[in-house]
Image 1 (cartoon, rainbow, N blue to C red):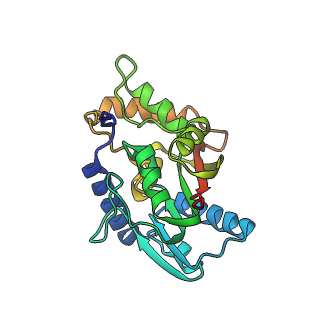
Image 2 (cartoon, helix red, strand yellow):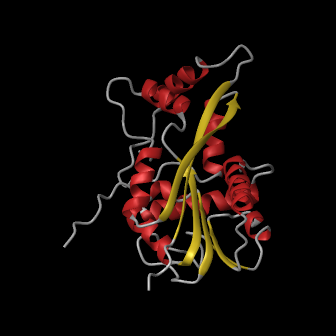
Length: 256
């Protein structure tokens, strides 16, 4: 019997983070959603390039409804929070979707190969899956600030991330046909560390580690703010990077 994957992330914290982000999206005057918007645009361009016009799709993780509105045919929208929540630790709806798109959720899954298998199994033969999420190289300015906050014994405050090479290996392991892995950088400029943290919370991008570190004290937070400000350009802005990793592939047709 295979041993279970290590428990790096907390499913309960992941769902709570998602619910908080959804609440902020409705309560904040102009909530941040640029990571989601970037992923939606990228997926739309990929589908147009491939001339893939599905009859039945499933979209997971798009709280805006924008992607589903632009897809032809029947579209089932699901999320990881709410009454129709999907659980990455258990099997998904099986077998007849021409297209499955997962936005911004796979970066905090303990069993990522298993989740990719669930996605593959939800596809019809020759169906297309696309998954986008923040990958390795994201948030270097924030990482710098967190290390400066605790110079002697830094705690784990940002979770590990998947890079392109690991993504390709995961797709092969999960049995996706025609696997493609690529990434692009989204750069956003900030005047303060607090604004960056606010944007992360509004988009559900905070950490969901199973063993979270205790909150930073005021002195540590001041060191983090100072280290972040030290990275500012002459206009007083710090450029932060979100590296969006995209995994795509198909379910193989049966051989007769």
